[in-house]
Amino acid sequence: MLRLFRNKRWWLLLVVMSVLAFAMSFTAKNNDLFNRFSLPVITAISPVQKVLSTASLTIKEGLGTIPEIFALKKQNEELLKQVRELEQYKQRFLEYQRENINLRSMLGLKQRNFQYELEAAEVIGRDPGNWFNVILIDKGENNGIKKDMAVITDQGLVGYTISVGKNYAKVLLITDDRSSVSAMIERTRDNGILKGTIDPAPRGYVKMVFLPQEANIVKGDIVISSGLGGIVPKGIVIGEVVEAKKEPYDLMQYAIVKPEVDLQKLEQVFVIKSQNGNQGGSNP
Image 1 (cartoon, one colour):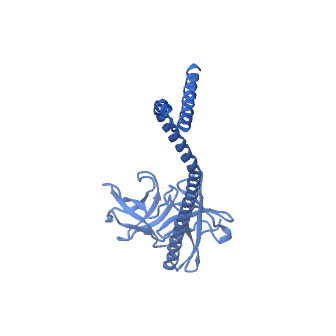
Image 2 (cartoon, rainbow, N blue to C red; image 1 turned 30 degrees about the vertical axis):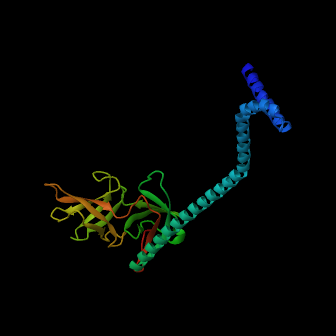
Image 3 (cartoon, rainbow, N blue to C red; image 1 turned 135 degrees about the vertical axis):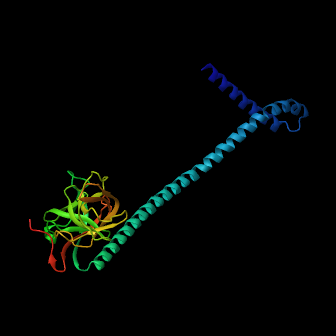
């Protein structure tokens, strides 16, 4: 407190001296003696006057910029709002673009497979008890969907329906170990059974079994549905062989197949309701 008091006294003294110097300079313009007396005082305190004047000017300038600061802040907020709106427009555009691509793909699929009666469906969820291998679609009995109808995309086979409600259906993916689809090697026409399995195939791959030991199956061969069994029509692409396995004393060989469809990123699918007028599926 003593230090603060001393500081106040010092500043008070400077102010008094400034006033005194101003009075002396004003009232004694023509008095040489007085001028000689006041000149040292004025000279001594002139730096203080300069500091006070500069500080006053700085404060005035600072007060003058306050409205500009508020104006800039408002402009900044408006610009940020516009950026957020543009980002939303961008996301909507990208989503519309994706939907357009999907619709074009579906249209192309229908045109290429005119012999099928296709029902478009959206993937609305996955089975909590079998998340990776069972999906839910938004079409069911009300749309003519039945059990054991093949489900495809424009890229290839997805799976087939295993249970159907009024307005939904469950689809078993070809990667599930319960799945069994008649298939063939497109190049050699060798037939086999496509099984969903995790052993020895990696997760997301499938295994084609019961292939003849003498079959010349190589990496890169395309696997398609054979049409046997009545669930999946013939000629639908399933995937590509990544490895063929032959055991010396086995009568059969098998192949590891990578599905053509990315089964973990499904959004839209088609259910094959009939082929050439023949109703697909089975009654519950």
